Length: 490
Image (cartoon, rainbow, N blue to C red; front, side, top):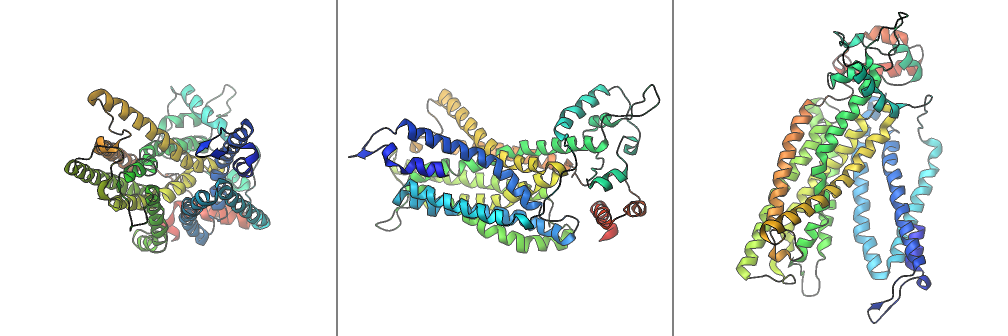
Protein backbone atom coordinates (compact mmCIF):
# COMPACT_ATOMS: atom_id res chain seq x y z
CA UNK A 1 0.00 0.00 0.00
CA UNK A 2 2.90 2.34 0.73
CA UNK A 3 4.33 1.83 -2.75
CA UNK A 4 0.89 2.47 -4.23
CA UNK A 5 0.63 5.76 -2.34
CA UNK A 6 4.08 6.79 -3.55
CA UNK A 7 3.44 5.82 -7.18
CA UNK A 8 0.24 7.87 -7.32
CA UNK A 9 1.42 10.86 -5.27
CA UNK A 10 4.87 11.91 -6.47
CA UNK A 11 4.27 14.39 -9.27
CA UNK A 12 7.95 14.67 -10.03
CA UNK A 13 8.03 11.15 -11.44
CA UNK A 14 4.50 10.95 -12.77
CA UNK A 15 2.41 12.13 -15.63
CA UNK A 16 1.16 15.71 -15.75
CA UNK A 17 -1.86 17.06 -17.59
CA UNK A 18 -2.19 20.41 -19.33
CA UNK A 19 -5.43 21.46 -21.01
CA UNK A 20 -6.70 17.90 -20.93
CA UNK A 21 -3.56 16.49 -22.58
CA UNK A 22 -1.61 14.15 -20.28
CA UNK A 23 2.04 13.27 -20.60
CA UNK A 24 2.87 9.58 -20.38
CA UNK A 25 3.90 8.35 -16.93
CA UNK A 26 7.58 7.73 -16.36
CA UNK A 27 9.07 4.24 -16.29
CA UNK A 28 9.86 4.62 -12.58
CA UNK A 29 6.28 5.46 -11.74
CA UNK A 30 4.92 2.58 -13.79
CA UNK A 31 7.41 0.20 -12.16
CA UNK A 32 6.38 1.31 -8.66
CA UNK A 33 2.70 1.08 -9.58
CA UNK A 34 2.82 -2.44 -11.01
CA UNK A 35 5.16 -3.62 -8.25
CA UNK A 36 2.70 -2.40 -5.62
CA UNK A 37 -0.30 -3.95 -7.40
CA UNK A 38 1.34 -7.38 -7.69
CA UNK A 39 2.62 -7.20 -4.11
CA UNK A 40 -0.91 -6.48 -2.87
CA UNK A 41 -2.26 -9.37 -4.97
CA UNK A 42 0.29 -11.80 -3.52
CA UNK A 43 -0.31 -10.52 0.00
CA UNK A 44 -4.08 -10.87 -0.38
CA UNK A 45 -3.67 -14.42 -1.65
CA UNK A 46 -1.70 -15.30 1.47
CA UNK A 47 -3.70 -13.22 3.95
CA UNK A 48 -7.32 -14.00 3.11
CA UNK A 49 -7.30 -17.81 3.54
CA UNK A 50 -5.15 -17.65 6.67
CA UNK A 51 -7.00 -14.87 8.50
CA UNK A 52 -10.42 -16.50 8.38
CA UNK A 53 -8.90 -19.85 9.37
CA UNK A 54 -6.98 -18.29 12.25
CA UNK A 55 -10.12 -16.54 13.46
CA UNK A 56 -12.16 -19.75 13.40
CA UNK A 57 -9.37 -21.59 15.23
CA UNK A 58 -9.88 -19.29 18.22
CA UNK A 59 -13.02 -21.25 19.09
CA UNK A 60 -12.64 -24.51 21.01
CA UNK A 61 -14.68 -27.28 19.42
CA UNK A 62 -14.45 -29.28 22.63
CA UNK A 63 -16.77 -26.76 24.30
CA UNK A 64 -20.37 -26.78 23.13
CA UNK A 65 -20.86 -23.04 23.71
CA UNK A 66 -17.82 -22.08 21.63
CA UNK A 67 -18.81 -24.56 18.95
CA UNK A 68 -22.12 -22.71 18.55
CA UNK A 69 -20.35 -19.34 18.59
CA UNK A 70 -18.15 -20.46 15.70
CA UNK A 71 -21.25 -20.59 13.51
CA UNK A 72 -21.84 -16.90 14.25
CA UNK A 73 -18.18 -16.13 13.58
CA UNK A 74 -18.52 -16.95 9.87
CA UNK A 75 -21.64 -14.78 9.62
CA UNK A 76 -19.97 -11.80 11.27
CA UNK A 77 -16.78 -12.32 9.28
CA UNK A 78 -18.84 -12.01 6.10
CA UNK A 79 -20.67 -9.01 7.61
CA UNK A 80 -17.42 -7.16 8.29
CA UNK A 81 -16.12 -8.03 4.82
CA UNK A 82 -19.27 -6.55 3.29
CA UNK A 83 -19.02 -3.46 5.51
CA UNK A 84 -15.41 -2.90 4.44
CA UNK A 85 -16.42 -3.30 0.80
CA UNK A 86 -19.19 -0.73 1.21
CA UNK A 87 -16.84 1.74 2.91
CA UNK A 88 -14.30 1.30 0.12
CA UNK A 89 -16.79 1.71 -2.73
CA UNK A 90 -18.51 4.76 -1.25
CA UNK A 91 -16.15 6.65 1.07
CA UNK A 92 -12.70 5.85 -0.34
CA UNK A 93 -13.80 6.15 -3.98
CA UNK A 94 -15.35 9.54 -3.21
CA UNK A 95 -12.08 10.71 -1.61
CA UNK A 96 -10.10 9.51 -4.64
CA UNK A 97 -12.34 11.29 -7.13
CA UNK A 98 -12.55 14.50 -5.09
CA UNK A 99 -9.05 14.83 -3.64
CA UNK A 100 -6.86 12.45 -5.63
CA UNK A 101 -5.76 8.83 -5.80
CA UNK A 102 -2.84 9.34 -3.44
CA UNK A 103 -5.04 10.43 -0.53
CA UNK A 104 -7.49 7.60 -1.14
CA UNK A 105 -4.75 4.98 -1.12
CA UNK A 106 -3.16 6.75 1.86
CA UNK A 107 -6.33 6.36 3.93
CA UNK A 108 -6.44 2.66 2.99
CA UNK A 109 -2.78 2.25 3.98
CA UNK A 110 -3.37 3.92 7.36
CA UNK A 111 -6.39 1.70 7.97
CA UNK A 112 -4.35 -1.40 7.15
CA UNK A 113 -1.55 -0.22 9.46
CA UNK A 114 -3.97 0.32 12.35
CA UNK A 115 -5.55 -3.11 11.84
CA UNK A 116 -2.11 -4.76 11.69
CA UNK A 117 -1.01 -3.12 14.95
CA UNK A 118 -4.29 -4.14 16.59
CA UNK A 119 -3.83 -7.71 15.39
CA UNK A 120 -0.28 -7.99 16.72
CA UNK A 121 -1.34 -6.55 20.08
CA UNK A 122 -3.51 -9.63 20.55
CA UNK A 123 -0.74 -12.16 19.86
CA UNK A 124 -0.20 -13.02 23.58
CA UNK A 125 -3.85 -13.99 24.07
CA UNK A 126 -4.52 -15.84 20.82
CA UNK A 127 -4.91 -19.60 20.74
CA UNK A 128 -2.11 -21.14 18.73
CA UNK A 129 -2.42 -24.69 17.42
CA UNK A 130 0.85 -26.56 17.70
CA UNK A 131 2.05 -28.85 14.94
CA UNK A 132 2.76 -32.44 15.84
CA UNK A 133 5.85 -33.47 13.91
CA UNK A 134 6.23 -33.11 10.17
CA UNK A 135 3.22 -32.89 7.92
CA UNK A 136 3.06 -35.17 4.87
CA UNK A 137 -0.55 -34.51 3.92
CA UNK A 138 0.36 -33.11 0.51
CA UNK A 139 2.10 -36.37 -0.35
CA UNK A 140 -1.00 -38.31 0.69
CA UNK A 141 -3.00 -36.82 -2.19
CA UNK A 142 -0.68 -38.59 -4.62
CA UNK A 143 0.21 -41.58 -2.48
CA UNK A 144 -3.30 -42.79 -1.63
CA UNK A 145 -4.61 -43.08 -5.22
CA UNK A 146 -1.34 -44.67 -6.34
CA UNK A 147 -1.52 -47.31 -3.62
CA UNK A 148 -5.22 -47.86 -4.34
CA UNK A 149 -4.38 -48.41 -8.01
CA UNK A 150 -1.61 -50.82 -7.07
CA UNK A 151 -4.08 -52.78 -4.92
CA UNK A 152 -6.89 -52.62 -7.49
CA UNK A 153 -7.00 -56.42 -7.87
CA UNK A 154 -7.22 -57.03 -4.13
CA UNK A 155 -10.57 -57.74 -2.50
CA UNK A 156 -11.93 -55.22 0.00
CA UNK A 157 -12.73 -56.69 3.44
CA UNK A 158 -16.33 -57.15 4.50
CA UNK A 159 -16.22 -54.41 7.14
CA UNK A 160 -14.26 -51.13 7.26
CA UNK A 161 -12.90 -52.08 10.69
CA UNK A 162 -10.65 -54.62 8.92
CA UNK A 163 -8.87 -51.83 7.04
CA UNK A 164 -5.64 -50.49 8.45
CA UNK A 165 -5.90 -47.69 11.01
CA UNK A 166 -3.85 -46.36 13.91
CA UNK A 167 -4.83 -47.48 17.39
CA UNK A 168 -7.01 -45.16 19.44
CA UNK A 169 -4.05 -44.35 21.69
CA UNK A 170 -2.27 -42.75 18.73
CA UNK A 171 -5.02 -40.14 18.27
CA UNK A 172 -5.30 -39.54 22.01
CA UNK A 173 -1.56 -39.07 22.51
CA UNK A 174 -1.01 -36.89 19.44
CA UNK A 175 -4.17 -34.82 19.91
CA UNK A 176 -5.18 -35.43 16.29
CA UNK A 177 -8.62 -36.40 15.10
CA UNK A 178 -9.56 -39.64 13.48
CA UNK A 179 -11.68 -39.38 10.35
CA UNK A 180 -14.15 -42.23 10.30
CA UNK A 181 -14.95 -44.36 7.29
CA UNK A 182 -17.53 -43.16 4.77
CA UNK A 183 -19.05 -45.27 1.96
CA UNK A 184 -18.04 -42.87 -0.83
CA UNK A 185 -15.18 -43.24 -3.32
CA UNK A 186 -14.83 -46.85 -2.22
CA UNK A 187 -12.06 -47.50 -4.73
CA UNK A 188 -9.71 -45.47 -2.50
CA UNK A 189 -10.36 -47.86 0.41
CA UNK A 190 -8.04 -50.33 -1.27
CA UNK A 191 -5.12 -48.12 -0.27
CA UNK A 192 -5.76 -49.19 3.35
CA UNK A 193 -5.97 -52.95 2.73
CA UNK A 194 -3.65 -54.86 5.02
CA UNK A 195 -1.18 -56.44 2.62
CA UNK A 196 0.33 -59.76 3.67
CA UNK A 197 4.11 -59.78 3.53
CA UNK A 198 6.32 -62.80 3.06
CA UNK A 199 7.59 -62.49 6.60
CA UNK A 200 4.01 -62.63 7.87
CA UNK A 201 3.87 -58.99 9.02
CA UNK A 202 1.25 -56.50 7.97
CA UNK A 203 2.64 -53.08 7.00
CA UNK A 204 0.17 -51.23 4.78
CA UNK A 205 1.38 -47.86 3.52
CA UNK A 206 -1.89 -45.96 4.13
CA UNK A 207 -4.27 -45.67 7.06
CA UNK A 208 -8.02 -45.29 6.85
CA UNK A 209 -7.76 -41.70 8.10
CA UNK A 210 -5.31 -40.89 5.31
CA UNK A 211 -7.73 -42.38 2.79
CA UNK A 212 -10.62 -40.38 4.25
CA UNK A 213 -8.62 -37.16 3.93
CA UNK A 214 -8.46 -37.78 0.19
CA UNK A 215 -12.18 -38.52 0.09
CA UNK A 216 -12.93 -35.28 1.92
CA UNK A 217 -10.93 -33.20 -0.56
CA UNK A 218 -12.54 -34.98 -3.53
CA UNK A 219 -15.98 -34.27 -2.08
CA UNK A 220 -15.09 -30.62 -1.56
CA UNK A 221 -13.78 -30.42 -5.11
CA UNK A 222 -17.13 -31.64 -6.44
CA UNK A 223 -18.98 -28.89 -4.57
CA UNK A 224 -16.36 -26.34 -5.66
CA UNK A 225 -16.97 -27.15 -9.32
CA UNK A 226 -20.71 -26.61 -8.88
CA UNK A 227 -20.12 -23.20 -7.29
CA UNK A 228 -18.31 -21.79 -10.34
CA UNK A 229 -21.59 -20.95 -12.12
CA UNK A 230 -23.10 -19.18 -9.07
CA UNK A 231 -19.83 -17.25 -8.74
CA UNK A 232 -20.50 -15.83 -12.21
CA UNK A 233 -23.14 -13.57 -10.68
CA UNK A 234 -20.46 -11.86 -8.57
CA UNK A 235 -18.86 -10.73 -11.84
CA UNK A 236 -22.15 -9.86 -13.57
CA UNK A 237 -23.29 -7.51 -10.81
CA UNK A 238 -20.18 -5.31 -11.14
CA UNK A 239 -19.91 -5.39 -14.95
CA UNK A 240 -23.11 -5.97 -16.94
CA UNK A 241 -25.38 -4.33 -14.36
CA UNK A 242 -23.30 -1.15 -14.40
CA UNK A 243 -23.25 -1.02 -18.20
CA UNK A 244 -26.99 -1.66 -18.25
CA UNK A 245 -27.56 1.14 -15.73
CA UNK A 246 -25.71 3.70 -17.85
CA UNK A 247 -28.38 3.38 -20.55
CA UNK A 248 -31.25 4.21 -18.17
CA UNK A 249 -32.69 7.34 -16.58
CA UNK A 250 -30.47 8.21 -13.60
CA UNK A 251 -31.49 11.76 -12.70
CA UNK A 252 -32.54 12.32 -9.12
CA UNK A 253 -33.79 15.87 -9.13
CA UNK A 254 -32.56 18.63 -11.44
CA UNK A 255 -28.95 18.71 -10.27
CA UNK A 256 -27.98 15.16 -9.32
CA UNK A 257 -27.36 12.08 -11.43
CA UNK A 258 -27.00 8.67 -9.77
CA UNK A 259 -23.72 6.94 -10.75
CA UNK A 260 -24.60 3.60 -12.33
CA UNK A 261 -21.95 1.83 -10.25
CA UNK A 262 -23.42 3.09 -6.97
CA UNK A 263 -26.48 0.86 -7.37
CA UNK A 264 -24.20 -2.08 -6.57
CA UNK A 265 -24.03 -0.76 -3.01
CA UNK A 266 -27.58 -2.09 -2.56
CA UNK A 267 -26.17 -5.61 -2.91
CA UNK A 268 -23.84 -4.92 0.01
CA UNK A 269 -26.52 -3.10 2.02
CA UNK A 270 -28.82 -6.10 1.63
CA UNK A 271 -26.06 -8.35 2.96
CA UNK A 272 -25.51 -6.03 5.93
CA UNK A 273 -29.22 -6.15 6.75
CA UNK A 274 -29.84 -9.86 6.13
CA UNK A 275 -26.78 -11.38 7.84
CA UNK A 276 -27.67 -10.18 11.37
CA UNK A 277 -31.29 -11.28 10.81
CA UNK A 278 -30.05 -14.70 9.69
CA UNK A 279 -27.68 -15.06 12.65
CA UNK A 280 -29.94 -13.70 15.41
CA UNK A 281 -33.37 -14.92 14.31
CA UNK A 282 -33.29 -17.49 11.52
CA UNK A 283 -30.65 -19.79 13.05
CA UNK A 284 -32.25 -19.97 16.55
CA UNK A 285 -35.68 -20.46 14.96
CA UNK A 286 -34.50 -23.36 12.79
CA UNK A 287 -32.32 -24.78 15.58
CA UNK A 288 -35.42 -25.36 17.68
CA UNK A 289 -37.02 -27.32 14.84
CA UNK A 290 -34.14 -29.28 13.36
CA UNK A 291 -31.94 -29.79 16.42
CA UNK A 292 -28.89 -28.71 14.41
CA UNK A 293 -26.67 -26.12 16.07
CA UNK A 294 -26.44 -24.37 12.67
CA UNK A 295 -30.21 -24.40 12.20
CA UNK A 296 -29.82 -25.94 8.75
CA UNK A 297 -26.85 -27.84 7.40
CA UNK A 298 -24.19 -26.04 5.39
CA UNK A 299 -25.13 -27.30 1.93
CA UNK A 300 -28.78 -26.46 2.54
CA UNK A 301 -27.71 -22.90 3.25
CA UNK A 302 -25.61 -22.75 0.09
CA UNK A 303 -28.45 -24.31 -1.90
CA UNK A 304 -30.88 -21.59 -0.76
CA UNK A 305 -28.41 -18.98 -2.01
CA UNK A 306 -28.09 -20.72 -5.38
CA UNK A 307 -31.89 -20.94 -5.67
CA UNK A 308 -32.25 -17.19 -5.02
CA UNK A 309 -29.70 -16.56 -7.77
CA UNK A 310 -31.85 -18.54 -10.22
CA UNK A 311 -34.81 -16.37 -9.21
CA UNK A 312 -32.66 -13.26 -9.68
CA UNK A 313 -31.83 -14.41 -13.23
CA UNK A 314 -35.58 -14.52 -13.99
CA UNK A 315 -35.98 -10.97 -12.67
CA UNK A 316 -32.95 -9.81 -14.69
CA UNK A 317 -34.51 -11.25 -17.85
CA UNK A 318 -37.92 -9.69 -17.14
CA UNK A 319 -36.46 -6.23 -16.47
CA UNK A 320 -34.37 -6.37 -19.63
CA UNK A 321 -37.44 -7.37 -21.68
CA UNK A 322 -39.22 -4.29 -20.38
CA UNK A 323 -36.20 -2.09 -21.19
CA UNK A 324 -36.13 -3.45 -24.74
CA UNK A 325 -39.87 -2.81 -25.15
CA UNK A 326 -39.34 0.81 -24.13
CA UNK A 327 -36.48 1.04 -26.65
CA UNK A 328 -38.78 -0.21 -29.42
CA UNK A 329 -41.61 2.11 -28.43
CA UNK A 330 -39.34 5.17 -28.35
CA UNK A 331 -37.34 4.09 -31.42
CA UNK A 332 -34.03 4.34 -29.55
CA UNK A 333 -30.92 3.04 -31.32
CA UNK A 334 -27.93 5.21 -30.42
CA UNK A 335 -25.45 4.11 -27.79
CA UNK A 336 -25.61 7.49 -26.03
CA UNK A 337 -29.40 7.74 -26.03
CA UNK A 338 -31.01 7.39 -22.60
CA UNK A 339 -33.85 4.91 -22.22
CA UNK A 340 -36.76 6.66 -20.42
CA UNK A 341 -36.88 4.01 -17.73
CA UNK A 342 -35.70 4.56 -14.14
CA UNK A 343 -32.48 2.88 -13.07
CA UNK A 344 -34.33 1.75 -9.94
CA UNK A 345 -35.93 -0.96 -12.06
CA UNK A 346 -32.59 -2.72 -11.52
CA UNK A 347 -32.98 -2.54 -7.74
CA UNK A 348 -34.89 -5.87 -7.27
CA UNK A 349 -32.16 -7.93 -8.94
CA UNK A 350 -29.51 -6.21 -6.81
CA UNK A 351 -31.49 -6.94 -3.63
CA UNK A 352 -32.06 -10.58 -4.63
CA UNK A 353 -28.35 -11.10 -5.29
CA UNK A 354 -27.60 -9.52 -1.92
CA UNK A 355 -29.96 -12.02 -0.28
CA UNK A 356 -28.31 -14.84 -2.21
CA UNK A 357 -24.88 -13.72 -1.02
CA UNK A 358 -26.16 -13.78 2.57
CA UNK A 359 -26.52 -17.53 2.26
CA UNK A 360 -23.65 -18.17 -0.14
CA UNK A 361 -20.74 -16.17 1.29
CA UNK A 362 -20.75 -17.33 4.90
CA UNK A 363 -22.20 -20.73 3.95
CA UNK A 364 -19.39 -21.56 1.54
CA UNK A 365 -16.70 -20.25 3.87
CA UNK A 366 -18.01 -22.34 6.76
CA UNK A 367 -18.51 -25.42 4.59
CA UNK A 368 -15.00 -25.47 3.15
CA UNK A 369 -13.46 -24.71 6.56
CA UNK A 370 -15.51 -27.32 8.41
CA UNK A 371 -15.05 -30.10 5.87
CA UNK A 372 -11.31 -29.67 5.43
CA UNK A 373 -9.06 -32.16 7.24
CA UNK A 374 -8.15 -30.81 10.67
CA UNK A 375 -4.52 -30.18 9.72
CA UNK A 376 -5.43 -28.51 6.40
CA UNK A 377 -7.99 -25.83 7.29
CA UNK A 378 -6.21 -23.18 5.21
CA UNK A 379 -6.79 -25.37 2.15
CA UNK A 380 -10.52 -25.19 2.83
CA UNK A 381 -10.67 -21.40 3.02
CA UNK A 382 -8.47 -21.26 -0.09
CA UNK A 383 -11.19 -23.30 -1.83
CA UNK A 384 -13.63 -20.53 -0.89
CA UNK A 385 -11.52 -17.60 -2.13
CA UNK A 386 -10.65 -19.46 -5.32
CA UNK A 387 -14.35 -19.76 -6.21
CA UNK A 388 -14.44 -15.96 -6.56
CA UNK A 389 -11.55 -16.00 -9.02
CA UNK A 390 -12.94 -19.02 -10.87
CA UNK A 391 -16.31 -17.30 -11.22
CA UNK A 392 -14.80 -14.17 -12.73
CA UNK A 393 -12.60 -16.10 -15.15
CA UNK A 394 -15.47 -18.35 -16.20
CA UNK A 395 -17.72 -15.31 -16.69
CA UNK A 396 -15.10 -13.71 -18.95
CA UNK A 397 -14.90 -16.95 -20.92
CA UNK A 398 -18.71 -17.19 -21.16
CA UNK A 399 -19.07 -13.59 -22.37
CA UNK A 400 -16.30 -14.11 -24.94
CA UNK A 401 -17.93 -17.27 -26.28
CA UNK A 402 -21.37 -15.61 -26.41
CA UNK A 403 -19.90 -12.64 -28.26
CA UNK A 404 -18.23 -14.84 -30.89
CA UNK A 405 -21.22 -17.16 -31.27
CA UNK A 406 -23.81 -14.35 -31.54
CA UNK A 407 -21.72 -12.42 -34.06
CA UNK A 408 -21.41 -15.56 -36.16
CA UNK A 409 -25.13 -16.41 -36.27
CA UNK A 410 -26.70 -12.92 -36.32
CA UNK A 411 -23.96 -10.53 -37.33
CA UNK A 412 -24.00 -8.59 -34.06
CA UNK A 413 -23.16 -9.38 -30.47
CA UNK A 414 -25.72 -9.98 -27.74
CA UNK A 415 -23.44 -7.98 -25.42
CA UNK A 416 -21.97 -5.25 -27.60
CA UNK A 417 -20.84 -1.74 -26.77
CA UNK A 418 -24.29 -0.41 -27.67
CA UNK A 419 -26.71 -2.14 -25.30
CA UNK A 420 -29.58 -0.29 -26.94
CA UNK A 421 -29.03 -2.35 -30.07
CA UNK A 422 -28.15 -5.72 -28.52
CA UNK A 423 -29.90 -8.74 -27.07
CA UNK A 424 -28.91 -8.63 -23.42
CA UNK A 425 -32.14 -10.52 -22.74
CA UNK A 426 -30.71 -13.54 -24.56
CA UNK A 427 -27.66 -13.41 -22.31
CA UNK A 428 -29.80 -13.29 -19.16
CA UNK A 429 -31.99 -16.12 -20.50
CA UNK A 430 -28.90 -18.24 -21.13
CA UNK A 431 -27.60 -17.40 -17.66
CA UNK A 432 -30.93 -18.56 -16.20
CA UNK A 433 -30.84 -21.87 -18.10
CA UNK A 434 -27.24 -22.58 -17.08
CA UNK A 435 -27.96 -21.60 -13.47
CA UNK A 436 -31.10 -23.75 -13.29
CA UNK A 437 -29.27 -26.80 -14.65
CA UNK A 438 -26.38 -26.18 -12.28
CA UNK A 439 -28.84 -25.84 -9.37
CA UNK A 440 -30.34 -29.22 -10.24
CA UNK A 441 -26.89 -30.79 -10.29
CA UNK A 442 -26.06 -29.11 -6.99
CA UNK A 443 -29.18 -30.58 -5.35
CA UNK A 444 -28.32 -34.04 -6.69
CA UNK A 445 -24.69 -33.90 -5.51
CA UNK A 446 -25.42 -32.29 -2.13
CA UNK A 447 -28.10 -34.86 -1.29
CA UNK A 448 -25.52 -37.59 -1.73
CA UNK A 449 -22.75 -35.69 0.04
CA UNK A 450 -21.54 -37.35 3.24
CA UNK A 451 -20.18 -34.92 5.79
CA UNK A 452 -16.72 -35.57 7.12
CA UNK A 453 -17.70 -36.07 10.76
CA UNK A 454 -20.34 -38.70 10.12
CA UNK A 455 -19.21 -42.20 11.01
CA UNK A 456 -20.43 -45.67 10.20
CA UNK A 457 -18.06 -47.25 12.71
CA UNK A 458 -19.56 -47.82 16.17
CA UNK A 459 -17.21 -47.06 19.07
CA UNK A 460 -17.28 -48.40 22.60
CA UNK A 461 -17.59 -45.19 24.62
CA UNK A 462 -16.61 -46.83 27.91
CA UNK A 463 -13.34 -48.10 26.42
CA UNK A 464 -12.64 -44.67 24.92
CA UNK A 465 -13.17 -42.73 28.15
CA UNK A 466 -11.18 -45.31 30.09
CA UNK A 467 -8.27 -44.97 27.65
CA UNK A 468 -8.12 -41.21 28.24
CA UNK A 469 -5.75 -40.75 31.17
CA UNK A 470 -5.64 -36.94 31.34
CA UNK A 471 -8.32 -34.25 31.46
CA UNK A 472 -7.52 -32.88 27.95
CA UNK A 473 -7.70 -36.41 26.56
CA UNK A 474 -11.05 -37.02 28.26
CA UNK A 475 -12.39 -33.71 26.92
CA UNK A 476 -11.22 -34.65 23.44
CA UNK A 477 -12.80 -38.09 23.45
CA UNK A 478 -16.00 -36.73 25.01
CA UNK A 479 -16.16 -34.33 22.07
CA UNK A 480 -15.69 -37.22 19.63
CA UNK A 481 -18.57 -39.12 21.23
CA UNK A 482 -20.88 -36.10 21.29
CA UNK A 483 -20.01 -35.33 17.66
CA UNK A 484 -20.71 -38.79 16.29
CA UNK A 485 -23.43 -39.99 18.65
CA UNK A 486 -25.42 -36.84 19.59
CA UNK A 487 -28.55 -38.84 20.35
CA UNK A 488 -26.77 -40.38 23.35
CA UNK A 489 -25.39 -37.17 24.84
CA UNK A 490 -27.89 -34.39 24.03
